[in-house]
Length: 149
Image 1 (cartoon, helix red, strand yellow):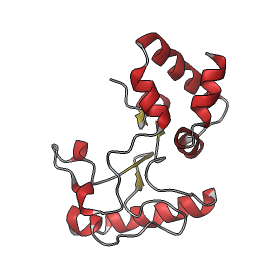
Image 2 (cartoon, rainbow, N blue to C red):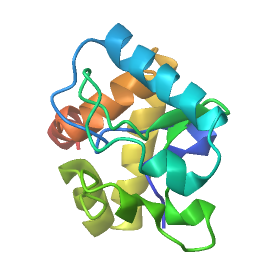
Image 3 (tube, rainbow, N blue to C red):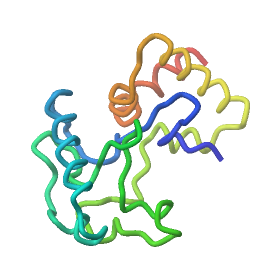
Image 4 (cartoon, rainbow, N blue to C red):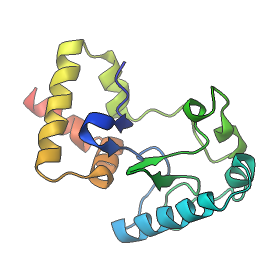
């Protein structure tokens, strides 16, 4: 199964479901930078995941970080042998799936492959992880793809 949140082949990662009503890109990336620095200085994953219960001013989750050229939640169970530290943050809607990813999961392999090719073309035209995240979450990429498909 392809996980659209982390597309290693395209060097894309998605933070679309990690907040809401995002402000401007500069403010959002600055908030993620601050969280990443806080994560570097953490004593434990529990300490980091419980240090705040509020979204950052930019609308992004305070736990989202940028490391090794990707956005991710350090509390995600794939990083801890199945233990889910996202439960420590009451703001986290860990079961949320954006409409784009939900739709993708229902498609046959051929349509999924075509969507990935569509994304690949977007990347070659300059789409970065920020634009990918915002447009996955708001459904813009899905709508554009569906018009062409």
